[in-house]
Amino acid sequence: MQSRIANYFGLELAGTTFRREVLAGVTTFVTMSYIIAVNPAILKAAGIPEGPSMVATVMTAVVGTLVMGLYANRPFAISPYMGENAFVAYTVVKVLGYSWQTAMAAVFLAGVMFALLTVARVRQWMVEALPPGLCYSFGVGIGLFLSFIGLNESGIVAIGVAGAPVRIGNLAAPSAELAVLSFVLIAILMVRRVPGAILLGILISAAIAFVAGVAKPPSVWVSMPPNPAPIMLQLDLRGALSVGFFGVLLTIFVMALIDTMGSLIGVSARAGFLDADGTLPQIERPMLADAIATMFAGLVGTTTSGAYIESAAGVHVGGRTGLTAVVVAVLFAMSLFFAPLVAAIPAAAFAPALIVVGAMMVAPVVKIDFDDYTELIPAFTVIALMSFTYNIGIGITAGLILYPLVKLAAGRRSDVHAGLWLLCGLSILFYVFYPYQ
Image (cartoon, rainbow, N blue to C red):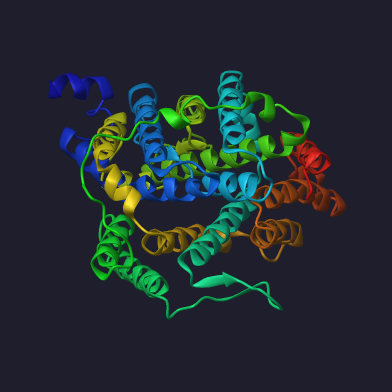
């Protein structure tokens, strides 16, 4: 059996072994398994029930990662993206007032567009159009956005009632004290390089919350998975295809495009998959896996999905083929039976994880060229507007408009890829059709 598996995935050609691939899969799963608890917690703000949401999250991870492993033969795990889930919950639903059903239709349509553009090789062309500096700013902005959500959800930071728009929360409250403890605990585990530090920190903090009475413990720890029917196939296609929703659809599309590019290229560089030109051979295969996962995500009731940068953890321990991804998918499937525990985890335990994830996403800021104003100004605009307008879409589209314009003003038109002008035009339409309130 092992020999047939080895032949299918080409383990010998890739310079790896069955044992190493399994270990890599376990490592990747542990480092990204926090999404099982965090994604439903975020989407709860959009009115999506946590039990079915957890099942949708896991199902999407299983299907997408299996396609990545069996079809693309890459050691990349797929799951709903952080950032996109926050955009849907806090911007599309809470700020703009759309239903989560309309947002799910947009996710599905984005997946369809991804699939069509991948097959036509247009998606690859659009990826090449995005300048590195702007991509770094997208990641930094989303990181700060997630951190602010985590600070607010945990009670460490509160919305101001007068004067300053934000203020320190009530740190004497048991939930806030637990959140601070959770943040420090996760930080210590990460500093000590403990595998699965984020998930372990969440679980330990949740246990403390149950014992201390900050949160009610689950009546059972293991059970059959919740019924996902309440959120499956609940797509409001009519609403998603309305003129007023165009800006949201564009934002979801661009965010996923950028996340996919960053994750695939970043992990591929770590694994040594890139060719002499810095491109990933047969990139259309993992891109198609992302597209299928995103279509599936919209159908089952969760947000845009794709390759996770945490896959680098598995690559670091030797994962080189799709067998790593298959192992991750199997472990995700097994996690379905722990829904009661996931649903019982309080915000004070999981919100600090958002702060930590946001901190890790801020790291690329050092790669932005601060000495070049044509790079700095668009990048700063992206980061500032994402954070201060509480809207990821505003930041992304502002950057896509400003970048080519400042390059043109500087007489450096050659720095702008033709595809970026297309994205600039689409971003202008975002503001034309944006539902201002």
